[in-house]
Length: 463
Image (cartoon, rainbow, N blue to C red; front, top):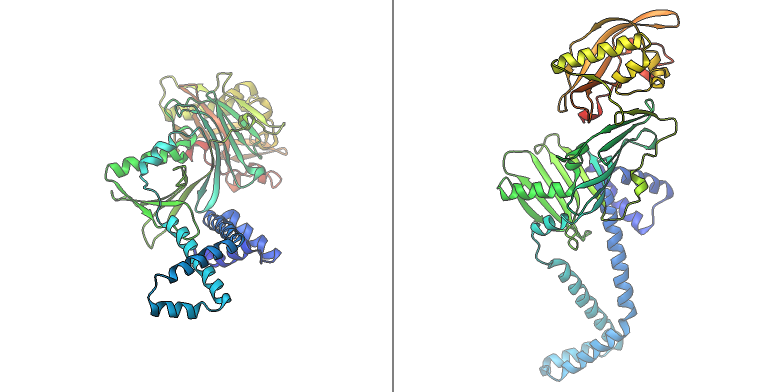
C-alpha cells in the first residue's frame, strides 16, 4: 500500500463496522474500485469481522454450560491442592460473581488459544503442491492490473490436457471504449469501439501457445516458470508470515540472477491454487513498475454465449477468414512490401476502385472507406511514400508515412498521414494496410472532423 492507502486503512475499518457517512462511503468505494491492495485489505477485514462475530455468538450461546463445567473442574481440583493454596483459592472463590467471572475468563483464554494455535500451525506446504494443483484448471476468470489500476479482463476455458479452447478479453476503461477480443476454433474476432466501430476477423492458430499474450497472465504458466527458476537457482522463494487479517498464504520470489524482478504470490491454503500474482520491476529507491493478476474464479461453468460476438448492429466487419486479402510479398523484402502495399492501396482509393482498395485495406468493405472519418482522407494525387519504420516487439509490421493531396470543401490540401502496414493473420506471405491512421494536428481537415480522424495509436499487436 502507498501513503494514500495507509490513510485509507482507518476508513476501511469504519466501512466494515458501518459508521461512515454516505459521502465517505462513495469516496472510499471509488478508491477500492481502483486499488486492488486496499480491496484485498477490506475483504480480509470483512472475513475476520464475520469470524469474530460468529465466535462470540457461539461462545455466548454455550456460556452457561461451559461455566458449569469449569466450576465443577475447579471444585474437583480443591482436594488435591496444598492447604495454603486451597485457602487462597477459597478466599478468591467465595463470591459467586467472582467465581463465574473467573470461569468465563478461563473459557475465553482457552478458546482464543486454540484458535490462535490453529492459525499458527499450518499444515506442511510445498510449492510443488501448487504446481500440481494448477494443472487441474479447466477455466478461469482473471483481472490484470498495471500500476495498481485495472487493465485487461480475461475469461478462458481449457480441455483436459490444458489446451486453450476459447477465450474472451476486455481491454479499456469503460463499456463505451472497451476493446473486445474473442478466440475460438482458430478464429480471432477483435472489436474496436468508436470512432472505428470495426469487427476484424482473422484466422489465428494457437499451436505454439502465447495467443494474445494470454500466456503472460495465465496463473499456471506463471507458477511453472517460477518453479523452474527456483529449481535452477535463479530465484529464491520465501513463505511470508500471514498478516493478522488474512487467511491466505503469501510467497515472495526474489531473483538471484541480477534481474530486478520481485514477485508476490497469494495462495489459497485449501485448494493450493494461486489467487493473485504481483510483479514488481525496479530497484529500491527508484521507479517501480507493477503488473498484477487477480483470479476471480477457477473452474466455474461459463455461459457459451460469453464467447460469441455481441457487438453493436452497426459494426463494420472486416473479414480476413473467408476471403483472400492484401498483397502477395513475392520476392520483395519486408520494407519493399510495406511500401508497395500502401502505394497500391492509395492508388486504388484515389481511383475510387473501392473493391481493390478494400482488399488492400485487409478486406474492408466499401462502406468503411466511405465513412466520414475515412472519406475525408481519400487521396486525389499521390506525392510520395516514405521509408517504412519498423514497429518494435511485434511480427513484421511498419509505420509508413506518405504525402498526398485531398479535396475538401472544394479546396485541395496536402496532408502527410502515417499508415500501419503488416502481415495478414492466417494468410502467409500477404500484407495489408491497417485501418489505424496517425495524423498530426496540421493534417486535420477541419475542426468538425478533428475528434474523428486525429488518431494516434500503435497497432494492436504491438502491446
